[in-house]
Length: 261
Ligand code: CAA
Image (cartoon, rainbow, N blue to C red; front, side, top):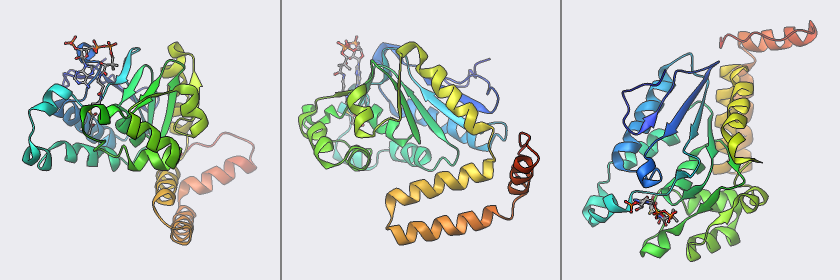
């Protein structure tokens, strides 16, 4: 059953702890309007609040994950409009989503679409995926993390090449550069992302949440600070019932049943 509260998203009921969110503006290759990003942030609010949801898989269509910010909408914004852009709140919402977010990507993943994908914790893409930051062709530059997240993901030289030429890279290049974790046949991308999500959904939600936070912290801080955060998080988890259950299940040679306590 799809949640009809959204006009530009398909949001079916969660299955086994996994919430799928599909971007759905086929007439514009899922170009991201302010309203669509707002819907996405509302869907993530729902997913955050829903205890049944352990992991979110974000996907697009077979032709495009998302072809960027909606250029037609962007054209109507002047400098003050961009300064007061309400989209910033949506980007913040996506950035601070505490549950694992997996992007299942086929086709065009460009501009704001690539920036959206880079908000995900795990990126899985079809062989047909194309990643790029073509903003330079419009006389602008990436404005939703496309310079900062891209350089952290693929390193300076490739990030510069993509941002300064606007030329996209294919899935193989994206995989060898570390932008994505896996390549699949295009028709299997969503299935594979759902499988990875299901594996994560079976784990302790507390451990998953702190592990995600620790990895993200590691991308943003110096080693000593990151290691300190990891140690604190590891210590916190030693006080959970899930940790007792995980260790007991291992010793008793059975599958653990985590309760998130
Ligand atoms: N914004 C608005 N509409 C878009 C769009 C976008 N980013 N990308 C595609 N569309 C629309 C097209 O205008 C077209 O609509 P019409 O039929 O009404 O003309 C429809 O989607 C299909 O697109 P094409 O006919 O162009 O399809 P194609 O297969 O020939 O080309 C493409 C596909 C190479 C992705 C091409 O559409 C393209 O170059 N799109 C723009 C990509 C881009 O520049 N993205 C960056 C935007 S800026 C940004 O993202 C900044 C930011 O976040 C801060």
